[in-house]
Length: 133
Image (cartoon, rainbow, N blue to C red; front, side, top):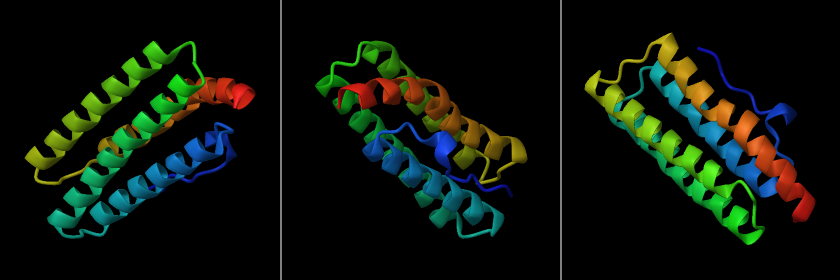
């Protein structure tokens, strides 16, 4: 099992957003480890639920900052957030239906789900926010 490592490539240069992203990386790694170590299904489900709940909270946090600082691309960014939550919820449902089984492709999906948004959409927002905060 591969662990996602937080490093400066994931930094959007806005400390409070970076802190949220670090927590999401930590939760993703905890979940991955719990599956690899065959922790109880209830524990794994709780971690996945926490990862999704923290993601929802984090998205609201970003959206609040975008509103406060009048980020010009807020509508597209919010739409991306909505799509990510839908895909995370669909992943969670599939995970539960599959009895908690995870393939390497599932782990890659989760990693990609988190990092692609940070590296593409959040970097643009972070650069803009860093200039106005």
